[in-house]
Length: 426
Image (cartoon, rainbow, N blue to C red; front, side, top):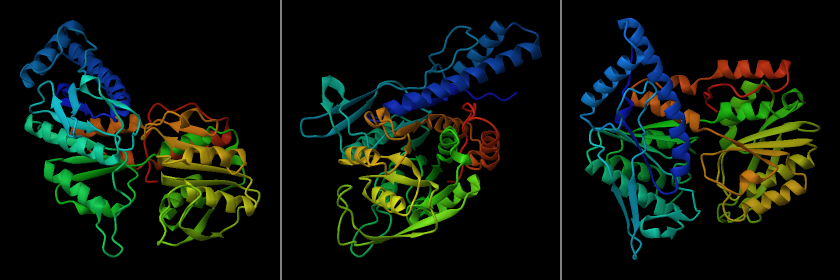
C-alpha cells in the first residue's frame, strides 16, 4: 500500500499566476482526496478496523512526518492538505517588489506559479493595484524563489507555462541568448525543476547544468477540442504548418489525425520588427501543398501580434481553403491582436481558434470564434508525480489515448470529455 503525504507539498502563487494555480490546486485536492479515501479504506480492511480509526492513524503519521506543520486534524476520512501557502507581495514607491511567506515551508516541496504574460491589474498588499510587465513578473519570481530558499524549502519547482524570453534562444550577431540566461538565473537561485508548456525551442532545455525542465504539450487537449467540432475530422482535411519552425509540431498532428501535411514557407526581412498584425517582417509567403476545398488545421506555439498567422490565413483562402482552424498553446494576443482577429473572423478568414488557459485572458474567451481548453489537469498530474518522485514520461506519450479518442469520434458523434487528459509530443 503506497501513500504519499500531501502535507509536504506547498504551492505559492505569484501575482498573475493565481488563477492558474487555483485551478491546478482544485485538481490536486480531488486527486489526493480520492487517494486518501482509497488508502483509508484499504488500511481499515487490512487491519479490520473502522475507517475513522484508520483515518486517525494516517493523520497521526502525517503529523509525525511533518513535525506538526500539517494543518489537518480530526478523523475526516476525506481530509487533505490545503496546498496553497499565504504570501504577502509588496510593491514599494520606487518599484521594488518584496515577497514575504507567511507560514512555515521548511522541508517542503514548493511549487511557485507565475504567468509572466498576465498584464491585467493585480492586487498587492496595502490595497495597491499594479499592472506588471514581463520584467516585473520576472523580478517577482526572483524575490519569491529567494524567499522560499531562505525559508528552508527542500525543493523548489517553478511552474511557468509561458517561459519568459523563449523567442530569444539563438544569437544573430551581437545579441544575447536571453532564454538560456534567464534559466541560468533560475538555476543559480536554487530552482530544481521548471514545468512549462510548448517551449519555443528545445535548445533552451539543454542550456542548464543541474536544473531539469519538464516541457509539456497541449496536443491531446487540442485534438479533443477539434474532435468535438461536428464532422470536422470526417471532412476533406489537411494539416498545414504555418512556417518551417512549426513543422515538427504539425507533423505530429498530421500523423495522429492521419491527414496530409502542407507547409507555408515564409521569407522574412529581419531588418524589420513585427509590432502588430498590420506591420510584420514577412516579405513573401509560398504554399507547398494543396488546400483547395479542404478544411485546414494549423498549430503553433505562441500567438503574439498574430500578423504572420493572419497573413497565412489570407494566402490559404486565396488558394481555395474552405475552412481554417488554428490552435495556439500560448495565446498572448499582444498589442491590438484581438481586434485584428475580430476583423479577420468577420472577413471569413478563419472558422475557429483553439487556445489554452496557460495564459490568463478575459476578453478572448468571450469570442464566438475562440475555444478555450483547460490544461490545469495535466499540470496537476505532473506536479503530483514529481512530488512523489515518479516518472512523468507517460504523460508525454499518449498516442494510444489519442487513437482511442479519434476512433470513437470517427464512428459516432463527438464524445464527452475523457476523465483524464494526457498529452502528446505535439
